[in-house]
Length: 121
Image 1 (cartoon, rainbow, N blue to C red):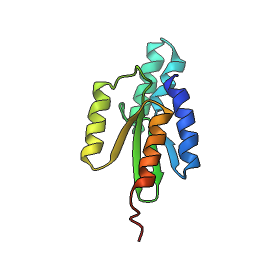
Image 2 (image 1 turned 90 degrees about the horizontal axis):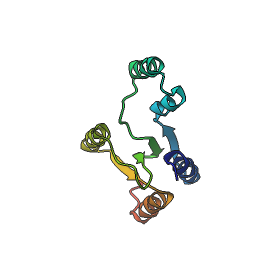
Image 3 (image 1 turned 60 degrees about the horizontal axis):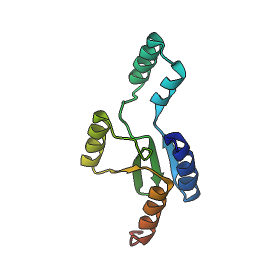
């Protein structure tokens, strides 16, 4: 299954579990530009000028008192060096960053969250 197909199912699942979802994969748009290097370069420069950072995890999931960054990969996908750097930076800042390869990874996370003791005030 392709990463974006996995992403659609995961977004539906997380929304059904009360999460607000943000897609940060702005560079996915490059695929629509084909091999036109001038347009690709222009698009990348425009996105960077607007604050887009290559290597940012694909999704941000928000729920009261919870911020979760998720990089989605299919079963053969590998993290690039820049993705590893961004994940390390976010983790060092105290954020929860996960790499999910399937809906099962998402479901396992949701099950783990359900098992956590409530820290409600």
